[in-house]
Length: 188
Image (cartoon, rainbow, N blue to C red; front, side, top):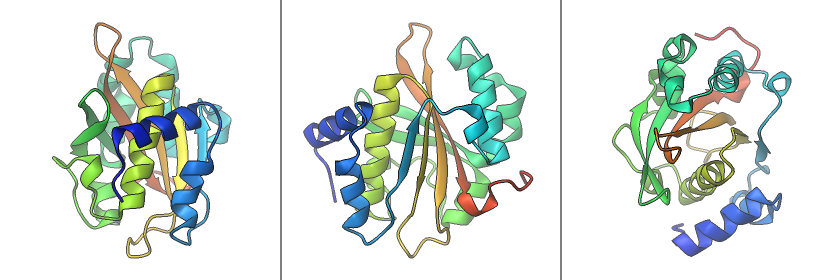
């Protein structure tokens, strides 16, 4: 499944306005449970210690590009992906893909585009839309979703943190990505 920029824009706009029908349909068409999507989540609502730490660091860092220098981010580098915005935020390139994520997924996506994810078109569409919505809203976005059945994870949890350049424009996304089954366990 490949979405046009018009379709991404429409779904991202819907998502920003609290309408999830289009995103939910992507998963229902695959016979998978509905994803959870929360904009600007409350810190207490984030159960996984890695994602909770990343959200706390994002909340206390005034200059969002400085987040990459935070000790907590460096301490969780194995559980984060760093993405550059491409084509004005219509696609993204993984410039870092943490070892823990790669091991769970079965492949390191560093250097790949989100639009070219090998794990299924609906996942690429979901990520393109939620990443775009995070840029538009300029707030953290928490998601939980099921990947295709051939991925060794039942549910992924993501915390998408938009980063801005010195001019205040979106430039990157820092994304904490964890297996939902490990929520509440010590970070490894």
